[in-house]
Length: 253
Image (tube, rainbow, N blue to C red; front, top):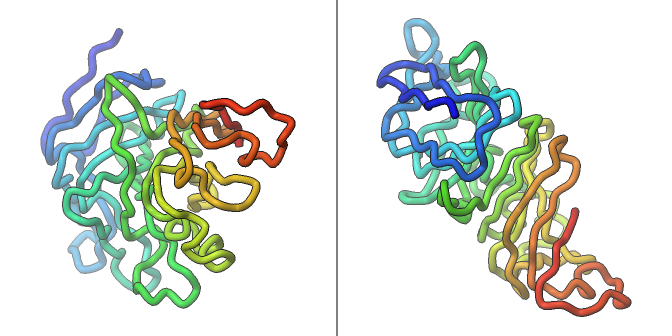
């Protein structure tokens, strides 16, 4: 196995071999992820951002271009703001979030906050889409993963205890917060649409995490199929009562 190269402070280059093993510990110490992000007030139009907390790599695309990161950092992502400076990431202190990172020629070109709030049309909270972190179920590299990335790097599946309606404004506008009564649920994020959707959703429309454990998210290489394990009733989840009742079942979405 090729040895990883420890990133040097003050450089935007990260060297990882493609196809990171899903349970391999690839933790980057504090302040080693450097991104050049737009800032119209800077002399050259960019500002260097150093992570304010350690960053853990949970996985990568098959070609190594896209990485799935986990961190309590509050300054990794910036959100486009037409006509002004990009908006800063907003996260609660100590909150763990996941990020999607794109590399070009070995340098970081883009970081997006995956586990983020999707504001409804009235946007009373005042946050832009993709700006505010909602938190995730933390993974422990080398032991277990609660977030995974597809081989093509365009889809991420993860677990979170945040209300599903906060991740998906369309869900909120259709059903309000009542669709999710609590517990961990499985979600998917698409880089193509930038949206998070509830994967562990029963045929009734309600989130499964309130009535059963949801765990072990997995994603197909092309991101088109998501699976997870749950103790939620398979009969109630699918509406197919011919299915034999079981304590734990594998669901494919």
